[in-house]
Image 1 (cartoon, helix red, strand yellow):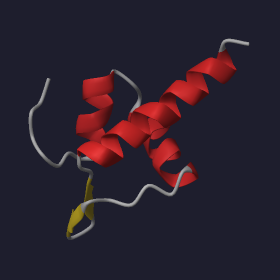
Image 2 (tube, helix red, strand yellow; image 1 turned 120 degrees about the vertical axis):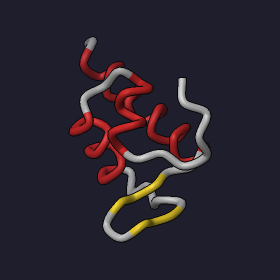
Image 3 (cartoon, helix red, strand yellow; image 1 turned 90 degrees about the vertical axis):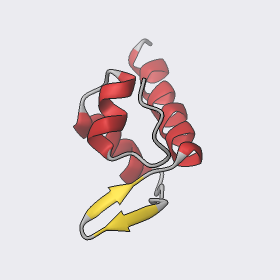
Image 4 (cartoon, rainbow, N blue to C red; image 1 turned 45 degrees about the vertical axis):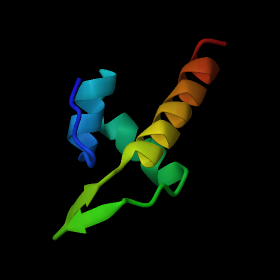
Length: 65
């Protein structure tokens, strides 16, 4: 597990073992704002990562029905 404060979508996807496009979908759908930006790169902090996890959990619950 990566212990960095801010992570990119790809790093979050690797950590959660999800496809990056699914993580990006959750970010867009729930309008999760990045904690910081470096140019065009969006960086997400622990609070945003927790919101992404909750969004992914909601997708998995709906898919299992």
